[in-house]
Length: 257
Image (tube, rainbow, N blue to C red):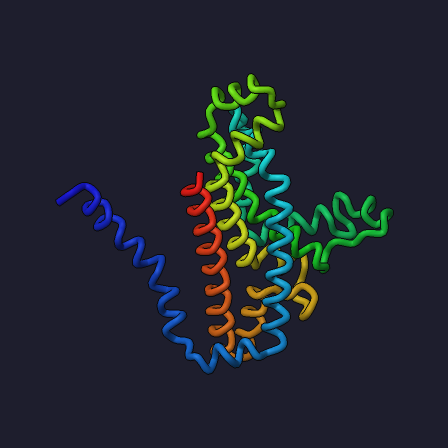
């Protein structure tokens, strides 16, 4: 038996444990339940809010996380890497409390924000911020790994051909790392889409304002398990569509390159 088959057999139990709950969820939900969930105004509002806020959170993450990942890839910065990894090891509820204690009315930045006429908690901005914080490590660390494969010699050649630092980075580093960046963005977007704990504590569960799809599942659990199951399947479908779509885009970019 080949080494690859042995590796598959050894990893198969874990794969089954990962996939089986999703199979059980989908198998237990009928088409009528899905149609009813999609027709519900609360579900449609939560879906629209989730798509808008996660798209914005992912865009902000790519804008700020890409230069940070590039800087991290060019040297050893263990303290900064640990700070980036922190949301991974902390429970989302802890991050929600931390955000509230930082940006809340009586928090660390509460007085300056109030003086500027800003109030973040229990707003759509709070939803975006919670999603951004919990999803950031997935993008930044994936982008850092992608940038590590960029050759310094290739950058130097671009500089000798007359390009400036930004021009060399755009012409060499960005195309080389683009599949990894797209893959990292896909993971981060899917993680933001499924964010629950930090959003609940920092943004609340206000219908039509801060109730995202995960919070809609939580609310539906108090009314009807079948409805909660159907909304959960909808969330799985949207997350898979994001992952598959962006992964295909990354694969196409890699092939074109």
